[in-house]
Image 1 (cartoon, rainbow, N blue to C red):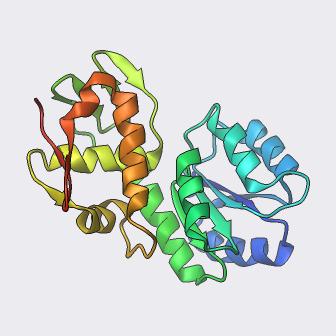
Image 2: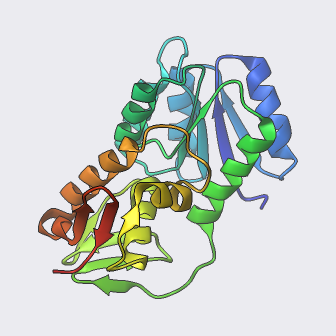
Length: 226
């Protein structure tokens, strides 16, 4: 996997080195930035080659939120936010902006690597199945793209994975806990309202076909073509 490039953005050089040392063992190419402004410069110079960004929140010159906003204007590259704050509202805010994963400091480097590998596996998997049409919503698994009535819809990695899980379980009522365990791919300890936030954004992007995602009161959600 030597063709995989990861950008580590953190103002603490010791933290960057710690993460870098563990990721290098996986044969990843590592790029670094010590503040928000440098992060955007490195991103712009390597946008077409980046596979993942590890982005700290609290940084000088430009914080992680500002960097995230600017990157999301042009790119869907997976982003894992690193933060010393574990506040629920911060996490919800991050997901609204397009964060794919959230890890609070201090964290286990091995757990970080596991989550990095999980995201890369989802975004760079070798699944070559043809696209499938769900009532006008076409999902291309190879290209990880979504089109609605022929028009491409931009989605973050998490939004895509959530929609994919719903359509794969068409007509089945899925609890929030089950969705968290399968889509987030690990035991998520935050509030399940993050699912509601993602569903709201997906429905909006799907337009009229957003009605296919039905809220099951007291349970969770179900995808049903109506």
